[in-house]
Amino acid sequence: MFESARGVVNRRSGVTNAGSSTAAVSGGDGAFYGRESFNPWLILFHIVLLQFCFYISYSILLFTLNRMGGIQSSVVEQMFQPVLLTFSTIPGWFTICSFVLCSIGPYLTALVFFIRRAKKCLDYTVTLYIIHFVACTSYSGRIPTHWAWWFVIILTATIVSLSAEFLCLRLFDMREISLNTTQNNSKESSTSNSNAAKPTQASAPDENV
Image 1 (tube, helix red, strand yellow):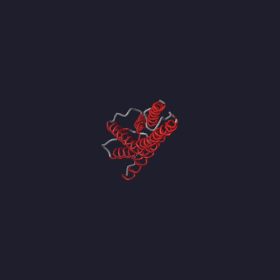
Image 2 (tube, one colour; image 1 turned 90 degrees about the horizontal axis):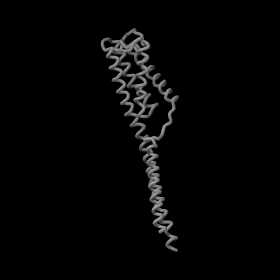
Image 3 (cartoon, one colour; image 1 turned 60 degrees about the horizontal axis):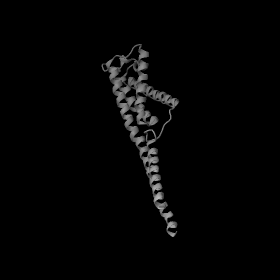
Image 4 (cartoon, one colour; image 1 turned 135 degrees about the vertical axis):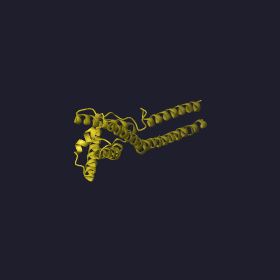
């Protein structure tokens, strides 16, 4: 009777340990890397940092292409005047190339390096282009209606967000999921071995009695 009672207790403890380890892997809220607290100051810092990286790289690339092509246009005018982002002029092509290159180069690198979460890449990318939309509207005094501007913005935002999600998933998220799964599997195996050893050790005194 005592041996059967011990077996029931051990089976229940094994189920409890397995459930707790599963909850540890899932993080309690469906995220394999655990629960993250909401930090508005950190989010604001990331937005400002990414915006800074985008505009610095955008202006440097645009200035370099203008100097190479002998264009004397204002860099600020090309960056924030939507009608100048066009396929019909050489300065317009320089603006498009600079915008695309800084988005898929320095900005994408900064996004992956600082954010490191696939599920957050779309939010920060959309925030970047919304701020750029507001800046262009404020500078030009009207909402951008040129089709080339919207085409480049939507295409670049799609490429950046998908690429950032893929890179974050491969470089950071999957690595943490694999690490957590390995740790919890080792804990489960050690717990199962200890539970299996307890009835064997306790059965010796019962046989002597």
